[in-house]
Amino acid sequence: MIPDEVWENKNVDDKAAVIFRVLRRKKFVLLLDDLWERLDILKLGVPIPDNANGSKIIFTTRSEEVCGRMEAHRRLRIKCLLPEVALDLFRTKVGEDVLNSHLEIPKLAELIARECKGLPLALITIARAMASRRTPQEWKHALKVLQSYPSKFSEDHEIEKNELIELWIGEGFLDKFDNIYDARNEGEFIVGSLKLACLLEDGGKYRFSTKHVMMHDVIRDMALWLACENGEKENKILVQDQVQSVKAHGFTRWKEALNLSSTAIGELPVGIKNLKNLRVLLLDDTHFLRKIPEEAVSSLSSLTIISMFFYQGYQSLDGLPEFMLVEDLGRLENMNEVSPCLFFNPS
Image 1 (spheres, rainbow, N blue to C red):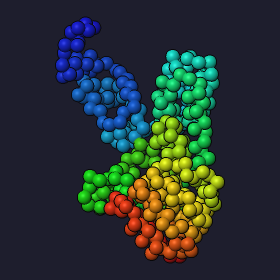
Image 2: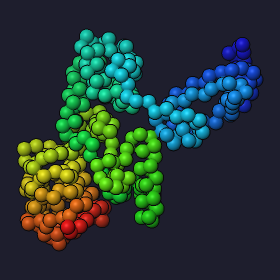
Image 3: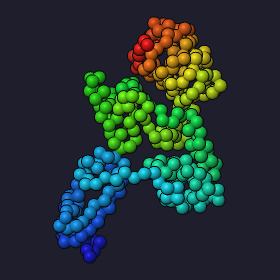
Image 4: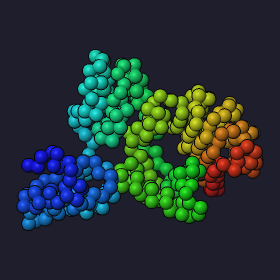
């Protein structure tokens, strides 16, 4: 054993040399948790496991890309956790101090953990967000928000990769590139990285599924929960599925993003002009949309992205012809900062 005061005075290389001398004649198992990048174990003084020494290194990661960089000999994809294991993980990340701060919180924690459906990423992220919440009112609010998302966000929704990248460009996520082709290539790389990290999956609904991606419904709900600042700003983003009208949904409460893609909505109400803080308007594949009120788009003074892609044929608008829609876009005060994606593919 090396005394603590001696060990603390050694530099990194000296510590690695000591570790190597200890382990090189031993059969060991090294466990590494939650790797996000390649770890050079030799720099740590850990001998490379082989058949001669019989040692093993086992690591966990949420990225398949890390498995490749670590030259893993065997990869094992872990399925969703069983309910009791999921609850134990959730409770561990929240902490017993918070769980015991009120009699109602343990039961609420169990209900919230159940909403995560056994996904470790969701369990850990939401538990950390709740680790400082000590009142049952805060926990009840979080549970209400989590339970409301499945009805607001369509399960198994798929998006075309190129459209996703165009939206990223419109949001300014790829601004470091002056060349649009370089930006799109970077977008493709990011999509691939998200798939390797199990945050995106290949689509399966369309014939050419590799062109489409989707998110697991719990991962999507968690991402939206975080985007709405842990559910504190519920009206920040709205995505509707299987609706024919937005009139009954109190749409004027929604602040920044409105997604009505792939819905049966027939017309946009005049009241949409009141959404002065709306930044993103998505109307992709709204095949039943026939009417957009005049000057509705130009009234959205904060708009930065509007998207109207039609993959399976397009039928003309009755209330506002295409050329007038383009003219309406041109009247936006900050038109130079707007990224319109208008793609009409006649059937």
